[in-house]
Image (cartoon, rainbow, N blue to C red):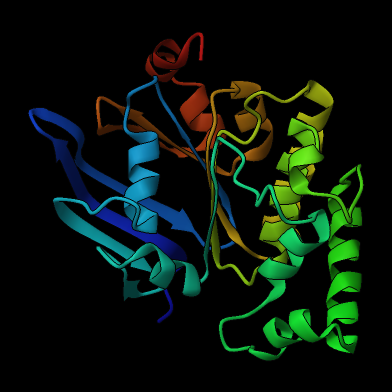
Length: 252
């Protein structure tokens, strides 16, 4: 029987010297749903995401993606299994054009033809550029597409990063504070794009977020961390209505 959970985290522990950053965290992300990870700064949220995507190796515990254990695999291996990541700081390729940022994400590991066509300039590149343009239109990137990505505003670089996520064949995406540093109007647009990932694409989404209204409007479930341990979890409306969780997250 296929599990209803795309990602299962069991007993993850990570220590840096004398500091235990993750103290046996358990979490389950339902397939095609949006799960928000909340809690005070230093609760272990980003460290948990790093452990899932391979940037950090946990000291103990398991990470299981779609029934396959991925604990301690290298980041590139985990990415090839369909895990995408959006970091709090925007990580576009600043020297590449806006188009090429998305075209690079369109290339599949098994597809050597597109990479060659980038050198030859044949019709395959034109098809990729058209697909990239459609994705840029979908997310609403405003700016020169033949110019370097570094020339885009911070908000448009965020949207470009989302276009690259849409270009990939992801089963799971992890978003680290997607609304950090953006204007309210862009926050609304990002909410729409996250719903697109989960609703239309069926992608499982995990996100770290400090904006509780954003979480309440968007997430199907919430995981609350405190001091590297699981503090609370469950359906969003239930978790956010509990006084202890409200008190813990007050001011986030």
